[in-house]
Image (cartoon, rainbow, N blue to C red; front, side, top):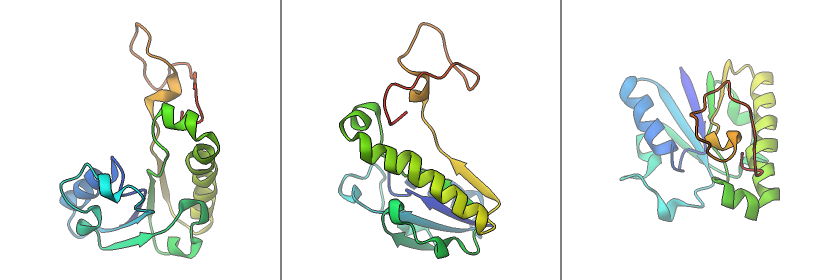
Length: 145
């Protein structure tokens, strides 16, 4: 299986890359990221170190020919958290929603069989007194959610 992690150099990407390669060292795993935050990585190594290939670019201008041959796309690219979503509302919508939707459609057209979109508990709004799960009512407060 060939997997492309879009947004592989953020908070979750390095951990996911390690997990996928540890689960199946023969799996081809590639990354696509701007590397804007490479100076503040939370991982103990450069995320591309465990990958078979690393591509750099802006997801808003994703090269769709890159999708050829992949079986799965995992979309982690995002302006993360509600305060950033409020401060950079247009960019958040462009990256978190519009680029994700455009890439999902392109992946389908390219024959990619799996598209995983990572979401956030922020879609449920402010914390209440009861735990929430996937069936809970949605109450997004910012473009991030």
